[in-house]
Length: 624
Image 1 (cartoon, rainbow, N blue to C red):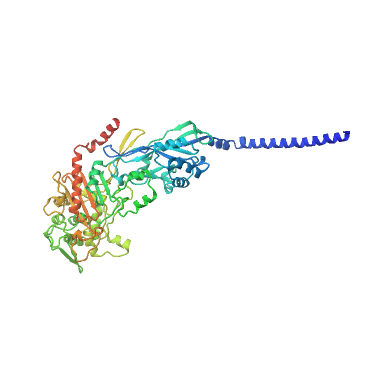
Image 2 (tube, rainbow, N blue to C red; image 1 turned 180 degrees about the vertical axis):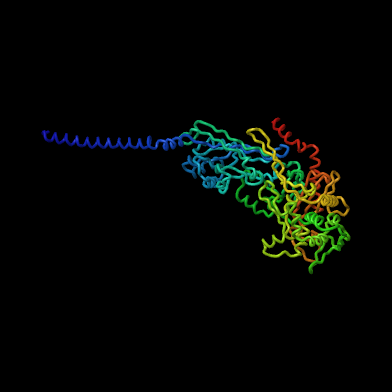
């Protein structure tokens, strides 16, 4: 090779080496710059991302508090269950994974896939439940499959040892809804959490729910746990003691056997609810386990309305029960106790208002008018009082207002007045409407819990309390029972003479030969009470009130009421019974009230006295 060719070759090689070295240096510079960007400038961010792929926080749900009756018997507790869940961030092929696991467990893939897709994914690596209540065999199959993103969660579900007893009072839990997630009252509650949706479970959800804990775990590349790093324990929910006696509750429900309606029993000395039954009931256990949408739709569309708590949400004309409040107004505002003649009809402004007894009651006074439930007497005296005076005295006993019972959805009922009709309907009040209101018909409506509180106040000389179903709370953290004090209401102010007269008349309703409540008479205890038969539809003017109910289609028959307290001389229990379309109150609702009262008197013999109850429950806890 000649010299100039060799020099040209060397120059070319050097030039190419220079370019290559430059490229190498540029590449290294880019790598160094990128490393500086990742490891220095954004060190914290990328370290956190790396850690999140290796270290995860697993939320652990607390055990929900128990619900117990006043004597410490568990009405709602927890049973272990296993749920199939997916960690969607670890699932590469969602449809394929669901198909594989469904095939192994012999389940339908469609519902599980839909459940996974509708979950709200706001927190990374939060498992979403796609199937509840796996059997132990299915749990083993899932664990054996070892599929990325497929996990089994050991959970608890609500269990009802007494079946459907007190279903409306206890309520049920369900997965938190979208509106609840946006509610400040549920701040911090994770999607998928089961919270109270009805009854006591809903009202006292925060006490029962507890606070979740957390585990920090190290996982491998497929998301499977390698080891636990740290643990923050859960705080279990508080246990809730209710005022009800489950034995009395079951006795009330048994007494209603096959009927529709409600029974409310409370202690008139403090407002504690001893039993609260609404029939028909629903299967809380099935709801706790999760029911398919089509079955839930069937329940909500059931014409028997099993989800409605008739005791606090149902409103009905009070019928003749309302006459007791009208009688109080008569004694407080009108002079004397004039003899009155009832001929079975009351002509008024061109219309004839009829008594339930076609032949009439003859010469009667106020006492007999209550005992025999004379309609004509209350037509006449209701007209003398006027609707506003009636509303004044009935309002003192709580008619037309919510009692404040600690259950959701309470209805207020309706206590009409001239001002109410002007405000709501834009019309004047007509005198004939006063006659209907005076016997508990027309616009007047009430709830069973209102009626129980009302009759209890009459027996207690006007002392009134807010009905309450929570007796107290057991704080598991400090192992202490906090008992709720009674909540006083303004008393129903009447003279002592008026209360004595009312109480004598109510005792006569049950014990006198012509009293309408003779079917409630008991050999065990003296009962004072009042019958009520409330018309569902208006009948023809010439038709007798409360005619033979067998002549009327069942859905148009009168509602049957009976309300009472016992013992008559020192009330320990106040009861209201409402039987929808039951017919005559005395013959249908009266025996039910008697059964409940007699069950209470029998049970009370072996129970701790109310004042001894906190110590009894504390000793019960100490014994484990």
